[in-house]
Image 1: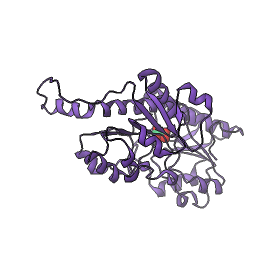
Image 2: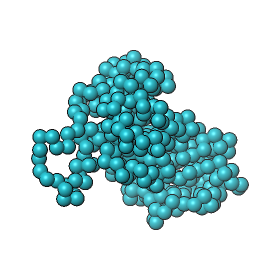
Image 3: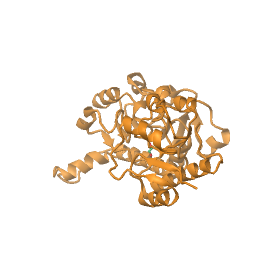
Length: 323
Ligand code: DGY
C-alpha cells in the first residue's frame, strides 16, 4: 500500500519528524523558512495531508486552489485563526488542532509575564546589562506585590483556568473572570472565582488582566483606548492569546501616559514585526511568542497532530477535529 504524502510547512522537533518519516512519504522543511502562498497552494495539490502551523495563513484563496489532493489539514497549534475555517469547511477539508498539551506551559508564560510586569523584571535586567545599576536602595525599582491581588481573566477556557489555578493556589490571588458563556458553578468553585457578565466590570476591578480569547474578527481590538481607560492606573495587562485582541497603538499610548502601570506581551499584531512604540517603553515586558515553547510541549503538539492524521487515514474520527 502506498504511504500517504504529507507536507510539513515548518521545522518540527526531531522526535516527531522521525516519527513522521517512519510512517509517511513526508516532505519536511529543513530551512524552516515559511512557505509562500504559491508553495502552500502547490502543497495542497500534491499532499494528502498538509501540516501547517499558526504562522501559516491558510486563506480562502489558498484553499480554493483547483485540483486539490489534500483531505486533512493538521494544524500544529491550539489556535487555528491562521486558517479560514469557513472556506476549509466549504472545500470539504477536515481541520484539526492540538489542544490540552500546551495548556500548562502557556499559563506558565502568562504567570511569568504577570510577575515580570509587576516586579519590573525586564527593566531591571536591562539596567544590570547596561552597567547602570548603582546598587541596592530603599526606594530603588519598587514594583507591585502580586500575592493576594485580583486577577481578571478575559476568557475562561483551559489556559485561563490553568492560570487561575496557579494564581489562586500559588499566589493567593482573587480570581474574577469574563467569558461569553457563564462557566459551570463547580468550575468557578475550584478557583473560588467570580464570574462577571461584562468585560468592563472585570477591567475595572482587576489588579492584573490576562487575556485568553481566541483572536480573529470576533475579538479584534477587544482591548482598545476605551477599555484601557477602564483599568486601574496601578493595573497590568498580560496577553498570551493573540496579538490582534489588543489595539497596539492604544496600549502604547496607555503605557506611555500611565493610564495603566505595565504590560506583559507574548503575542503581537502582525508579529514578528513589532510596533516600534513598544521598544521605547520601560513598563512593558516583551517575549517572542513563547507560550508553548518547551521541548516537552512542542513534541507533544507534534505527536497530537500525528495522532489526528493517523486516525483520519485509518478511517476514524480525529480526536481534535475542528471541522
Ligand atoms: C498556539 O498553539 O495557538 C500557540 O499560539 C502557539 O503555541
